[in-house]
Image (cartoon, rainbow, N blue to C red; front, side, top):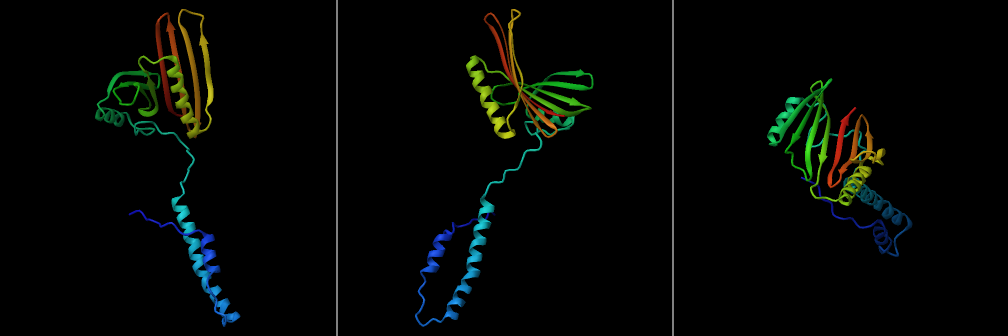
Amino acid sequence: MRAQFSRPQSPTRIAQQIKMQPTPAEMTRSQANCVGNSNRPAMRRFLLSILIAFFLSAPYAFPVDELVPPFGFRWNDSMRRVEDVLHGAKAKITSREKKQTREVWTVEGLVHPGLKRTVFTFKQRALVAVELQYEYADWSIERYNQRMGEIRKYFDEKYGTGKLVSRSRDNDTDVIQTLVGYQWMVGATMLELFYFSAQHDNLVYRTITVDYKAL
């Protein structure tokens, strides 16, 4: 059961009440000192209650020392566990590729606004990277830029200012390509955010990717 605290009076109000207490004319100096001393334990209890209420109600901000992968996964999850979770979520593994010491799965069907596909990477059959690829049908470049700004701001506020790792535009071929990327290092993990577009005449492909990696 969560403890409930009634709002205490302010210290100023308490002090005013003590000061306004009537003192009989016949009270001796020693009697006045006794009254003052008797009030001290009450004041100490009151101040202690204020400190306890403050520390119980104040939000605690713990520094983030490691990123965790999305969708409730954990680093070094086994391939079997990841597959079981994907099966339970009714997501489909559309491809499995082996690349040197790593195995890469492309998955579709995980529910998240704009999420087109998710790429899981395993090393020695343990999860080491998750990449989210977002595509928004009929969005203009302005909407993509706005969305990039929102995601970047969210990560900046959570993990500190990201490092610009890529900003390029290739106009040397028939396909105009643009790539912008940012990176956040958190302990032994890394987060990357990229915007990529490729345009050829009226054909345009745009995507935003968010990549979680264990180093």
